Length: 79
Image (cartoon, rainbow, N blue to C red; front, side, top):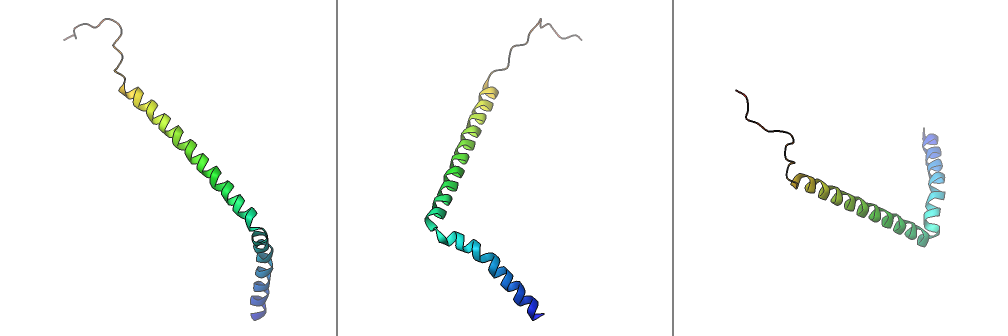
C-alpha cells in the first residue's frame, strides 16, 4: 500500500515538474501572454457592450414610434 502511494507521488511530481518549469522559465513571456489574454477579453467585452447598446436603442426607437394609421375604409361598427 505504501509503495503505491510513493509511486503515485513520484508520478505526480514528475508530471508537474515540466509544467512548473515552463511557467517559471520565462516569467516575462508568461506575463505578456496574460496581458494579451486580458486585452483580448476587454476588447470582446467592449464589443459586446456596444452591440447590446445599439440593439437596445433600436428596440426603443421601434417601440417609441406611433402606430401606423389603419388602412382602408373605417366605418361605424355593425350592431
